[in-house]
Length: 181
Image 1 (cartoon, rainbow, N blue to C red):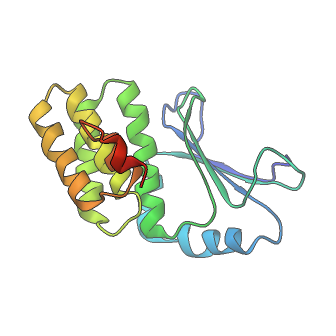
Image 2 (image 1 turned 135 degrees about the horizontal axis):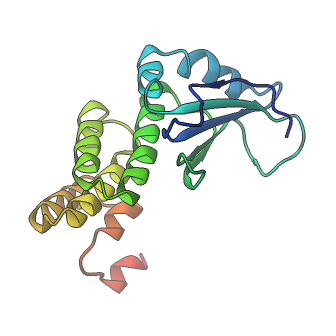
Image 3 (image 1 turned 120 degrees about the horizontal axis):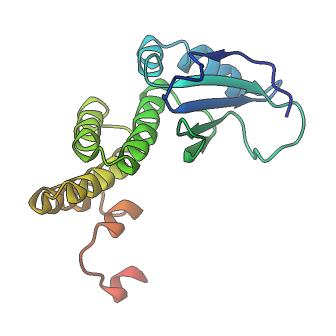
């Protein structure tokens, strides 16, 4: 992988998670992500102060299947999330927040995770990431010792997104016959 890029906000004392965006020359989705998403003021605000951003140009075959690819890591380079393909700003911000939440959950920051995910659901109600946000909001609530909140959040998830894999994961009892339809 040939790296032609800049790292913003890096530094050895910086403990922010890492966002790496991998582009490929001639990729129309990459050009659209750069032009439409990464230049969007809301996305810039979300990245600033929360992420160390690295952009790479992938000119040789690598482990990337589709472009652009966004890879998120903890400050100590442990994987958080990876997503392939163009994301508009409305989907990119929830992706970044979920990745940050995963790092926070590992660090025991359960209340912050609940707040971040609740805010994301409120700000981006039409995002395709919302079922996953609700699922992990329930997880964070459970880890914070709030079982009643988990029950409510996961009930809302199952009612609002009954066919999503996240609703199935949040089911408290499975009905095998229904699962085979």
